[in-house]
Structures are given as C-alpha cells and as structure tokens.
Image (cartoon, rainbow, N blue to C red; front, side):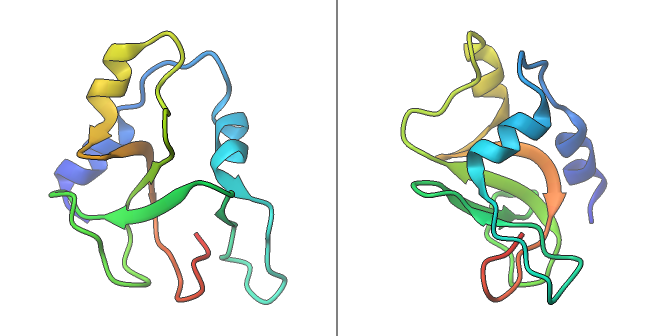
Length: 105
C-alpha cells in the first residue's frame, strides 16, 4: 500500500462518538464463523467500497481505503471534517481494509 494512502487513512478528524459506535452505524453485524478475517457487511442503506489512493475501486481481496456513502452523511457539527474526508461522492472511514467476494469487510 502506498505511503500516501497510509497517511490519509491515519488522518482521522476528532469525532464526538467513538469509532466503534460509528462503525456499528455503517456495518451490519453479520460475522461469519467460517473466517476469522471477516468482520461485517454494509448496514442497510449504506454502500461500502475499497479504493486506491486515486479513489478508484480496487479488486476483491486487495487492501485499500474503506469509503462509504449514505444519503445525508456528514461529520457531526464538523463540516470541515466532512470536506477533508470526502473522496468524491464517497466519505472516507479512515481505515484500511479489504472486501471479499461476498461483500464482507
């Protein structure tokens, strides 16, 4: 993974809620017992994507920046953070992840 992507993923704006709480809002609790590396799928009405440093979607299994979109999402009382973390029409979660062929992150 590139240095630029690693640096951008580490630039997380301060948020009033914990990251674990925020992740529960975008990830659906659908853990799989078949693989310890699977975490979850997107929550209803949320789209997730793994992108490279130029914002292009990456193939299945390739690590990159986790981005999401859901109508009306923004950082609570922090419009500048929303602008800073925007990746086109996607909003950066600020984490590096990969997605499997079933859509699990």
